[in-house]
Structures are given as structure tokens and as C-alpha cells.
Image (cartoon, rainbow, N blue to C red; front, top):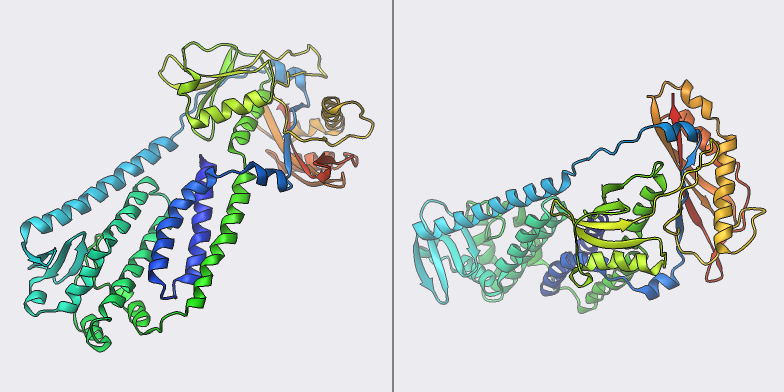
Length: 502
């Protein structure tokens, strides 16, 4: 879910950048309005448009999660591991934000309703003029035009005509759409930027229509000679906003853009193609499975089961049994079916997956996993590799390894584990003043397209441990690179190293 939101933010930033740099200064107001209305919602849709044909044609970097290397396995086995239940506060924060902004929206609607009910309303053609007596204002909301009584008495028709354009073209609907987006994505500042851009555009549209029937000089006087109050209601079209006044005058005096400049809208095409390539090569379901793999590989002691919460909000359960009501496949959500199908594609008979409604009424993604055997050896811990690693046609080959793909993969893991375990200075952990207990170092490295070890990075509880991990990984020899569709590809490896501080 977090990845989905980040993609939305990224796409909206790019769409706004194209608008601000290339489009907003042009006089193609109707096209700009369409652009500003479509692109924010398109940002929600694009992450779901994944094309397998693009995935197959674009070379990718494959990431493989290696089993944990245990530097002092016996003491880790003896360490009692307890799973603490953690509360995920993000859903509560999100719902609180939605409720707060919903209340603010309703208060604004109430404010408009109050103005309608307490002031005189007169008909003006198909529209209703709400004659204000307290504030000298001019704004519109659907077919209601709010103006000060004196403006009507003085027959300030330019101002009224300006607001009528807003009503005719239903600009209020545009603003309400962004109000709803602000409720759902209250944490997204780009929605406010979008609403600001379309508010300015609405004024350009109305100004352009009015000066077709009146002189620019007369209209300038209407803008400059009157001083209006501005209501703090973001989804009303207001005639006078001091911050917009200069922009409106510049746009009124601007010559119409040449039709040739409409070609600027074609800039959206390469942008869309880039977005589709990006989302097609980003597999959310694969990311979820990799997260499950990580939990499977980090299980050091077999247990009856383990609950954890994935990034997408799923409650997941790893274990041998889970009491509850099994949900029929036909009642799965699209996301649940996607995860289920991903597991089935791997054709691993040891893994069973289903959706179960547990005793608390929670919808749990139940993954039945056999208990991993643990050898009673101080040098070796064997954890059942229940879920295969990232799918790649030809895996990288460690020098001296032979056999089929699976044998080569296992051999590479064993060789890396052996090298790390024999070369890592595990004694230094007890000399750095670290807190007693089980600690981990996380290492990321790449077997490049030519087989060399590159981009070694590490995260550890102490800088010296981090440097030691990088030093050891750099001892790995040059390998035969992995291949996909006959071409060499880079493969990234993530390697957890576990140890116990006495």
C-alpha cells in the first residue's frame, strides 16, 4: 500500500511539472482544464496497468534473499525468542485524518447553506443571486451567485457575468472533486497544488469569456476599483483574490497561443510510456511474497505459528494450522487472488495458502508452512527453503559449483555462507559494548553483469561491524553472471548475518 501511494505521489509530481513548465502559460484553457481533471485520477489508475509484454522486453535487476548466516548458531538456538504483538497505528491515523477533513468539508457546506438561508435570493435568468448585506463579496457555488446587494443595485454586470460563466461551465464540480480527494488523501500536498492550479484556470476561463462581450478597459476597472472580501471556502469560485489578480491581468492581455503550441500536449505520451514501464517492472505481489520469504528464512526456532502484518495491511499467519472459517476462492478480493495465484505459479507442494476468518473476525492470509528441521550442530542450521527465490533463467555460478539450476543455487548459498562464517570476526561483537542478545547485520551486494561483486552495502548496530561485513563480502570471487533470455543480468543479493552478543 505504501508503495502504491508513493507511486501516486511520483506520477502527480511529474504531471504537475509538465503543466507548470509547458502548459499553464498557454491560452488553451479548455485543454488545460481537461489535463488538470484527468491527470490526478490517472495517477491512481496507472499503478494497476501492468503489461507483461513490457516486463519481458525490459532488462531487470533481480534481487535474491539469501538464508541467514548464523555466526554462533548454538547460542542462538538456545536463545528464547518471543514474538511481541505490535499495534499498527497507521490505519488509525489515516481514518482520523479522513474524519477530520470530512468535518471541515461539512462545516464549509454549512457555511454556504447559512448564507443562502439568511440572505435575500432573487432570480437572474436561470441563476439565483444571493444578495449579501454584511460582506462585500462575489463568488459562486453551482447556480448560486453570492454578491453584495450594492453590486446589483449599481448594475455591476461584468462581475455578475463573470460568475455566470463559472455556473454555466460547472466549475464547482471541478473544485468539489478535489475536495473529495483532499478528504481521502489529506496527507498529499499535491492535491492542494492541483486545486490551486484549477482555481486559477477557472478565473482565466471566465475572464476570457467576459471580455468577448465587453471592453478590456472596463473589465480592468471592475477588477481594480472594487475591494472584496474573500470567503475562506476552497470550493467556491471567487471573483476577487488579490493573489490571483496580477496573473489574471497578464493572461487577459496575453495574445492567444498559436495552434502549433498544442503539440506540447504530446509531451504527455512519453511520460505515460515511462510510467507504464515503471509500474510494469514493479511487481507488488512479488514484493509481498519476498516479505513472506524473509520471515520464513529468519525463523530460527520452529513454532506453532506467527502472525505478522504486511505493508499492504494484510494480516498474515505462517504456521501449520489456524482455526477459523475458510473463505471460498470466489469471495477473495482481487489482491488476495493475485497473491494466491503467485504462490500457485511456484508449484511448491509444501506450501498451502488460503484466506481464513480467525476467531477475532480478522481476515487472515494463512500460509501453511511445514516446520523447518534444525540440525543439532554448532556449525550448521538447515532451514527448509519453502519458497523459491526470484525467478531467473540462469542463476549466477560460484566457482567450482556444478549441476542443474537448483543445485547451482544451493551451492552458491552454501559457498557464501561458508565464506562469511569462516572469515567474519565474530568475536569483535562482544568487544563493542553492544546490548546483550541476538543482533543482525543486513548486507546488500550485486553480482554484476560481468560476474564481479559490486555495490556492497551493509547496515549494522555498529560501524565496525558494518565495515567487517563489507570486507568479508568483498572476499567473494568473480562468478559466472546470471542470464535472462540469453543476456547477462545483474543480480542483487540480500544477506542477513545473525549473531549473539554475550
